[in-house]
Amino acid sequence: MASKPLTDIASLDPAIRAEADRMILSYKYTYREIADYISEKSGLTVKHMIVCRYAINLCRREEERRNGKSKAFKN
Image 1 (cartoon, helix red, strand yellow):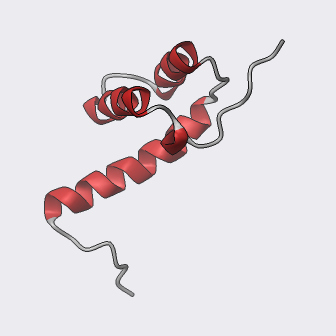
Image 2 (cartoon, rainbow, N blue to C red):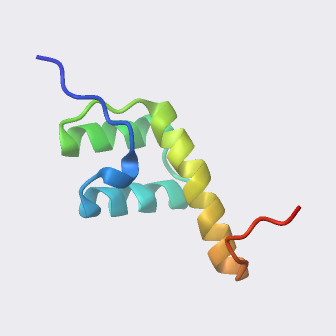
Image 3 (cartoon, rainbow, N blue to C red):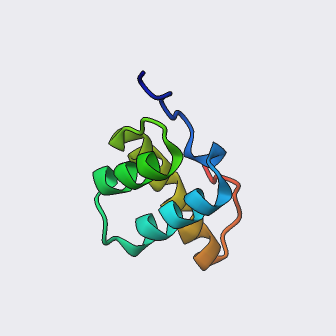
């Protein structure tokens, strides 16, 4: 039986998501390694492109937090 595919990392168990966030922000792991970790812990199928899209947004939010910028976009 195939496992259910994961479509949103934000919906993961908070402990798994926190570790995935740590792995992403450490820049020591590939997206495939992070996807494999999430799959192993959650039992869900995770494609590395899901991790990539999540990582882009996570890094953007982290940069905004560090720079103290608001979430509003400037034109």
